[in-house]
Image (tube, rainbow, N blue to C red):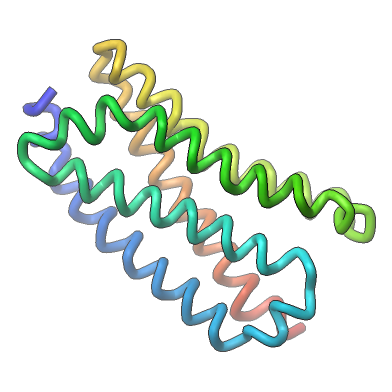
Length: 164
């Protein structure tokens, strides 16, 4: 498995940088528009969801770059990371069910879909890697890239759409 991680080193390096930069962007977006975000009951949870997903992607990619820890951290712990990445945002969304009644259904469906598209591939990939299927790394990579795409969209919401 170490040779698989080594072959993916450039990908993980790029994703660590992207996840770190996007984490900073989300934090800046939150700090710039904090009062406005707090005035919408669903937006603090949405911001927290994106930070959970980004930190998860950042940690997975960072651990994959550590020699000798790559197998332990990426392969064996990835299923747990997938559960955390999906579980945290789902708990946040479940706590906001009363707010959903005041919002268009399409907003909530997209929000749930984004979280699932980012977290489920990591969970599936981690399970495949634990089972010995090196192809699971493609699932992990898909989850990391989906996380970054979802974060860009949500950063847009927190920076620009909130002002409309």
